[in-house]
Length: 347
Image (cartoon, rainbow, N blue to C red; front, side, top):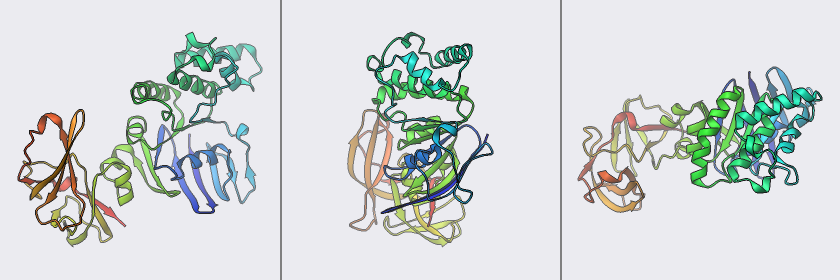
């Protein structure tokens, strides 16, 4: 199982230039709205055509601009789950799913595949209902069943939880993860939600303005993004320009401090990032005096906005986020940060 994508498409105010390689499991594409993540799926599926490049799936060329190969969507054996699920409202669930088997002429084989997929998706009791009678989560599973019954070589999920409320979204993520593990083929999941890609994807690519910033294991990309944009996409709240002053030391002018690092500081250093959860009043390293600016209470956490003692006027407050039970309303005089938690962000 393998997917290779190297494509380019020029738009009036935007250039998409994406290179991806994926072999097994679930690959996440994480980016803001308008970053090109859904467009990338549409190029792979054959819904849109790039200006140039190559798309190869399991050794089969789906698109090659130089060889003038451009297979239509129905010949790519790629399943695409749209954001709105695109179920036929005048058909029962059973007939909707059977639409995915229009190429299968053997009646027994059609019935067998239908039973297996319905059992996998746990929708046996929904077969005679219509889409309008289903909840959002049920519609999602039916739409997935219609795609998976045709046994595609690649499954593309475009914001699969975007139409669901937060409670249902959390519940369905668990179910979908189990289903995708049983599917046992390549999957690309597009999302702007950090939680979704972290829960569901083994590999992760960050995309911004039509370009892939970095790719790696999901946990590694989250724990150590290599660029300012990557840190923002993975949820880092404290980012500031920095310059190298030693092999393991940087200066951060906007915070009025210097920080020791666990990794050697690259010559191409652009900024540092510190995640809001990583500050600690008992830390023994990178400790500086601080003063409180504001407090934001959430249901289960407290976010404390603070400034360093020598921080210049006009610079942004920093965020310190901690469990609600640990906040007693008193700001400690000093906060520290472990060198291993200082993110080194390159140009």
